[in-house]
Image 1: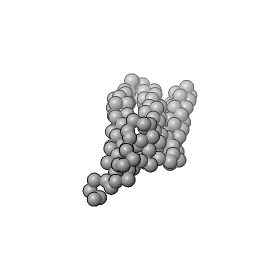
Image 2: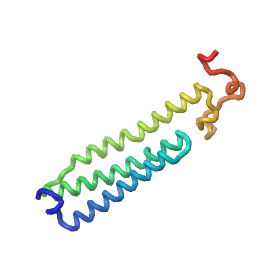
Image 3: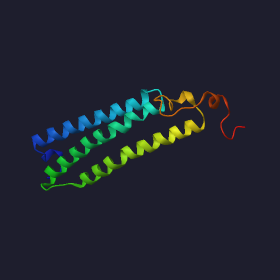
Image 4: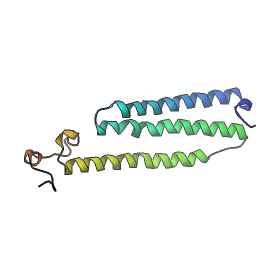
Length: 133
């Protein structure tokens, strides 16, 4: 089997549904990145949807090549595992770096203090940041 023309109908249906579902999820994440107002809210769109959307695309690829080559193709499992392990960690590190940056710059309006976990005292907000003295 060499291409899409030789793919059975049931496999073509599964692959096309997974591709449509995965690309829709990735599109929703991209729209969230564009539409949400603060950096911390923008991080949620891509961070959450990349794993589910990319997972659907990788499963579609697995089905396509497994049926097309008449043998089990599992390269995508390794990619999925790597993606599931690294995407949440990278998102968390980016958000922690942004919180650290905003706290160092004493930006109370940035959203770093919204949850009440981090606080900036009133005297710290009015005083200049380190290096601006």
